[in-house]
Amino acid sequence: MLISQYAKFVKPAFDDFVLPSKKYADVIIPRGGDNHVAIDLIVQHLRTKLGQHDLCKIYPNVYVIQSTFQIRGMHTLIRDREISKHDFVFYSDRLIRLVVEHGLGHLPFTEKQIVTPTGSLYTGVDFCKKLCGVSIVRSGESMENALRACCKGIKIGKILIHRDGDNGKQLIYEKLPKDILERHVLLLDPVLATGNSANQAIELLIQKGVPESHIIFLNLISAPEGIHCVSKRFPSLKIVTSEIDVALNEEFRVIPGMGEFGDRYFGTDD
Ligand SMILES: O=P(O)(O)OC[C@H]1O[C@H](OP(=O)(O)OP(=O)(O)O)[C@H](O)[C@@H]1O
Image (cartoon, rainbow, N blue to C red):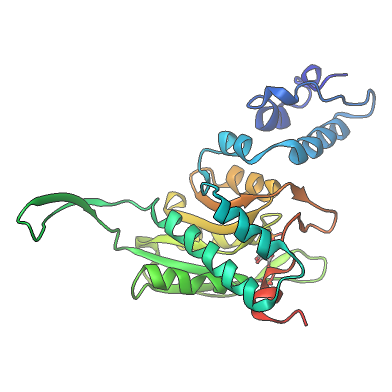
């Protein structure tokens, strides 16, 4: 049976994945079984088939920085398991800086006029002043320097979410600017896998009064599953990433991915 014939049974999965990308409508689903099996099969298949452009069409608040050979080259290096720690940190930092700059481009601005040394009027813009960073400990801390380098004196809060056995991820610690609800928040974590950590962190920010549309989540590598999970729950939040990978494996690790970012960046994988 064709996936398109299953439309009426698998409405949610169909709306999310199939309608915007009709090219997958000829995926063959085995006959029989219950609808849940069919849904799982479709979603599983499409998650591995959807390209980043398809995902950006489905979720208009997802932005992938424009790829260049420099960016591909940096990804090739940081994903290589043979790279030295020094090079991993160096090229991660370069990529992080690009993602941070791109993310800042999504902040609101006000128009501003100045006079140039030639005495001419120049109409430009003024940066958004009310912002802060929030890093998800520990990998997110690797992105703080780039944010500080771009935004002088920026306040940076922290959230620690830890996996507790099989009980899922628990919020362990948070320290956020007191007036965070008045600020635009740049949420920092280089890896978006299942989306559980990000969702917990975003939920906390919203509880603190930050409007969903004032949050920009910056990361280096996203799995489609994570994009789906976060964007579906928080549709007006923006995600800025440098590449969307193929899928998660059975251990919920991003594939092809770059391994344990925190361990590689902070040198705790020896
Ligand atoms: O989307 P999720 O499935 O929640 O996974 C993503 C989380 O996993 C990684 O951190 P990790 O738990 O490895 O901790 P670390 O930052 O200390 O390395 C990453 O930095 C995210 O925080």
